[in-house]
Length: 326
Image (cartoon, rainbow, N blue to C red; front, side, top):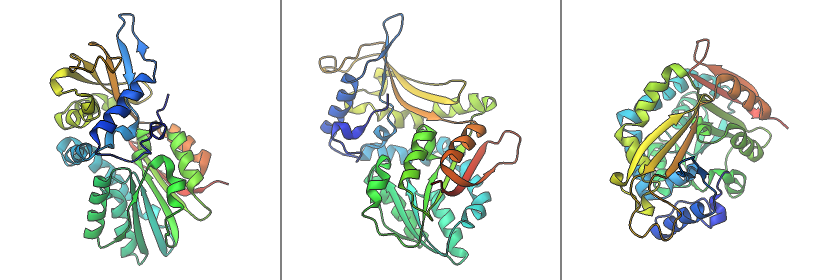
């Protein structure tokens, strides 16, 4: 089951209304049937990706994580991959382009490509799209430092086509999805972008692929404190504090990481309004690291273009740039 925030009147937009946020989480819990273990322990899902960026406190926590050692290492490796392959992306650009940064965060990767394109004489406009206004502020500030004209699109990545109806862009549109599809199942997210694209548009998408050899290192990174604090924000509106829960992360053989909290104590008053008990588990995030073949198969289903990857037999990073199929 994939939750739809719009069904609960949040419209996919971040909110600082703590009570509304709490009511959304309570409704999501009430509306689902948990997985029950033989010991009658229940596993609940609050793993809709947008729930991690619902308010300014979560945005600030994400920025701290992004700038921490734990966050910088994987981000840095992904940026290095992008730097090595920026030329491949830019050759698909016309003289005038509008980069639509889907789930922008601070925009560091897309703005690197934008700067490189400008240095080659192209005219570039930048449109960060995110549901969290605080995160959009970071992207706009970063664009200003790069001297790139920018306009924010405040909205839900699930509603790309509708959001772009009211946005006047210039020249060719570049849909910059990057590695953010890893927060979703690849096929549904690529289908959404495909459906929002028109003839002449271009997409860039990438993935940090799954490797069993790196599993211990990856699990250790997720277990470091900046990650714990960030993911705890997902259930803080329910009243949980760090002493009430045990943090955990697991990965299956298909490269799906589940990040969760086991409940040691239920905050006062929560049992009366939520179907939670001590010993239950709440999954707050799922991240997907596809294999290279899965990535190629998914992109090829919707787009025509070019694949590129790190130069090894089983690449750590893989990217694609191209246009939509009819």
